[in-house]
Amino acid sequence: VLIYGESGTGKELYANTIHNESQRKDEAFIAVNCAAFQGDLLESELFGYEGGAFTGAKAEGKMGLFEAASNGTIFLDEISEMNLDLQAKLLRTLQENTIRKVGSVKELSIDVRVIAATNKNLEDLVEKGLFRQDLFYRISVFPLTIPPLRERKEDIIPLVDHFLSKYK
Image 1 (cartoon, rainbow, N blue to C red):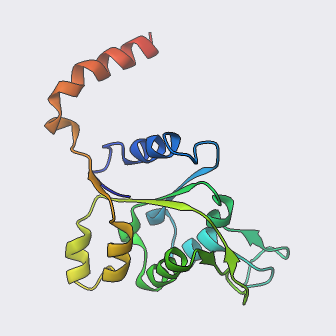
Image 2 (cartoon, rainbow, N blue to C red):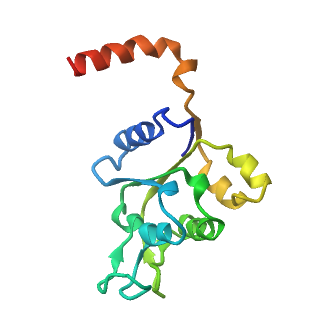
């Protein structure tokens, strides 16, 4: 699932709802903001690393978020901010259902549902060479666009009622 929507439209809420209505609802739901990590840090967060794989790495290594989400769902928010090298590694993960930790030579099998989201037009980024076309086609099997609240005026009163009753 690829969720499109402006910042603040509730993309993560929709992703969480998709997870909670699925057969994986009793398993992990892990949300990752891809824009929040600099450089190679996102790779080690997503895939984990072996002990001593890089300067500052924990001696015992670290489990990545894909491994932690196994049998559940991983939500990749702002996937458009992922660099091209990491996009290639993500594509391999989606195709092979395996991960390779940073500094490892072993592949680990995983079973993870991936939901991605962005506030950018990925097709435009593909044309500009900023997003991999093969990854775009892999993640956009079921695209979902969430319109902003200004285009859903009928939702304003129910939302006001909900928040008034919640915070009275």
